[in-house]
Image (cartoon, rainbow, N blue to C red; front, side, top):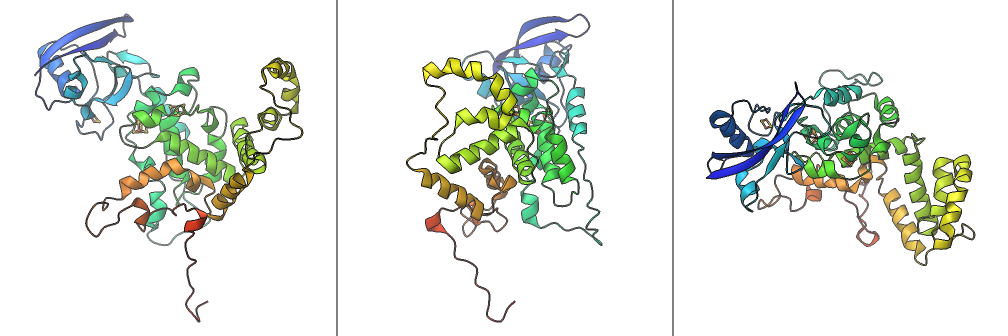
Length: 371
Ligand code: SF4
Ligand code: SF4
Ligand code: FES
């Protein structure tokens, strides 16, 4: 098969950039990485890109195709050219380009280093011999442990584009890998640190990192879990945390978001006073409903019941981040096998399954005489 592709070439020594088009013969099964190898071998030996394992585990071959980050060795070239268009290959975003498709990963590793990517052993509960952690505790960090440090999520991160100091999706996902680890003894210190400026609350929730991660780590979910864990232990001084708290309070008490009170509740009274002029300009447009008397939604009891339900299920903190449960699909390798579990929640290693009041599980019976 003859394929054409355009590649953004960059010369770090001169700063020159040029879009070059190449044509090369490859097999139908070839990946983008195979195709780049063919270009380099047969057409232009000066083309620079990174590779190592060729099988999606080393994280070396991250690059952009038509503006979105991919692993070149996980991407079939046939899928890129089958619509008749010529794919455009470029270096990953949010990292300085060194040459052609090679980026400087130093900023990536600096963020990774900043979150202390190693276990801090629990000194309060010394363990004799092997420290065996129950499988269900390890399931909590299964997804985050899959990260191969490729940088595809960082490449697409909106927050990092506007704030290069933002810790970013890869480092924060790694952070949750340790916060959620039963053997780690630095949970509070980590949550304090990750809650600082440029940390978890600076994520704009664009979800591009989840979309682009080639390993199913879902970094945005990990960030949500960090936020939930931080709030669970009372680390909520950041405006983002206060914002989230007010959403819950507001929904629980009146069944809808009382935006008029959002500014004083999250940014403080002084800031709210400064914003009065702006608020007055919104008033004629009906954007500032009067705070008193507060409007109470007709079905507010449904909202309150939902709040109580989540509380009774013990889903505070990371366990309440519903998006994360997609991970269970990765764990349920037996799904579909005759006699095996039919749903991730049927797996005994699963998190607690959320339930509605009518499906409330029977309480476990204590055998007579047991205490
Ligand atoms: S969801 Fe947050 S961390 Fe992920 S890409 Fe968007 S801004 Fe970055
Ligand atoms: S979270 Fe995913 S995209 Fe980000 S570095 Fe890890 S494997 Fe790559
Ligand atoms: S070459 Fe290792 S992940 Fe692609």
